[in-house]
Length: 119
Image 1: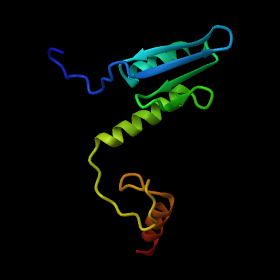
Image 2: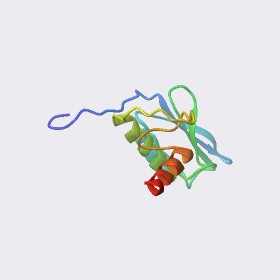
Image 3: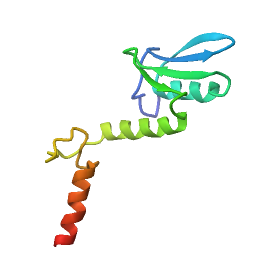
């Protein structure tokens, strides 16, 4: 890519969009990235019964029957951004594996608020 950045996400067609339609059956579209898969789902979501995004490990990561693609896209972008940022190590006193310095669990948030009123 002259004058720009190289793509950060290439999967050589290992991300699959599976379109299921009651009348025409199932169709699979190979995509080179999650961005391309999201665009494909957005393009076809109203013309099929269910659209799914399947990752390179054959895990279904999105199903239109369960969630709106725009909501999933927002969550995916947030997760992608979180992975690309260096986060300070944080040891949750409640052993919550999803608790990070920039995204505290509910108990740690409550502790933080309570400590503001004690001071």
